Image (tube, rainbow, N blue to C red):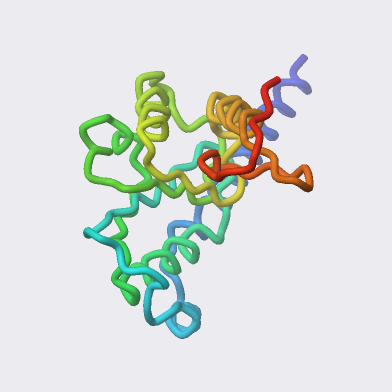
Amino acid sequence: MRSLLVRAIAFGSFLTAALVVARAPAEEPVPADALAKIQAAAPDKATAKPAQPRKLLVYTGCKGFVHSSIPYVAAAIQEIGRKTGAFEVVASADPAVFKPESLQGFAGICLNNTTGELFDDPALKASLLQFVKDGKGLIGIHGLFRQLARVRRAARRVLRRAPVDGEGRRQVGRSHAPGQRRVRR
C-alpha cells in the first residue's frame, strides 16, 4: 500500500512539473527575431476595407496542455490587424470576456490553440453560442471543435442544410445562390 502511495505522489509531482513546463513557453514573449519575421510576413493592406472599425477577440485560455505557438499566433494576428487596419485585436486568457456584455463590441472571436473545457460556467458557453447565432465570426486555430461540442453539432446542422452545387459539393454560406438545391436530412 505504501509503495502505491509513493508512486501516486511521484506521478502527481511529475504531472505538476510537466504542466508547469508546458505552460511556460506560452507565457513568454515572442523573441525579437521571430517578431521581425512575423512583421515582414504580414500583409501591408487589407484585401477589402471594412465599412466600420472592427474588433477581434483573440482568446488564449487553456485548461490542459498549453501550446508554445500561442504567443506567436497572437502576435501574428495582432500584426495583421495593425498593418492592414482591418481590425483591432484584444487578446485575453480570462473566460470572463465571454460574458454577453463583454462580447458586444466584437465582430469576431479567435480561439487560439485553446485546450480543455473552456467554460466552467454554462452561461459563458451559452453566450458564445448566442454570439455565433447572431451572425458574428468565430475562428478556431487548432482544436475548436473539441472545445465546443454544441458548436460542432450546430456546424453539422448547417452543413447538412447547405446547398449542393451541380458537382455534389456543399456550398456553405451560399444558400441565396440561384440554381442550387437544398439538402435536408
